[in-house]
Length: 117
Length: 113
Image (cartoon, each protein chain N blue to C red):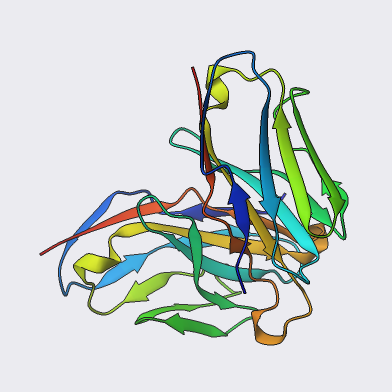
């Protein structure tokens, strides 16, 4: 299995620009999570989906952030307009509750490092 | 709501020393408990897990036991190596809250030769 795939791995943009981060979960997984990691705040859960439906978006910082999951194999996290304080590593993770002894484990992508100048 | 508290780092040890990283949790119901590890510049990898009280998770010489009476899931290793240097995250997955995974703040471990 290819694992969770995120793109881009690195993004440098200027304040005010739109940023779109992409995630392809592991095939067959029914949960998808977006996390943000910074030195100051550690790992923060932004939003998660179950069967493509958003379950909890209470961690989304503000209206500039939006996430979609149009189908089981793709999700996006969009920031518009971006600000310097959005600079962080954004992780996508997926999981399944159907896979025997590994049920409940989250599989993480390698992250998208965003720098907003 | 549910939460996880880890001992603060950084923790600095000499090679072959004994490691303990404390983790306690607050949760309703019966969460699953996890330890994840993050090596520099990489994503998070599952290190071990336990799904019910008294379960012991183990992997790569690391162990942790799900203690419901003390609401703890402390990570231990008898003899650390330089290659164990990383950030370790304790986490719980609360099925009472829709399957959300909640992380502790992470503990940085540095092992010196």
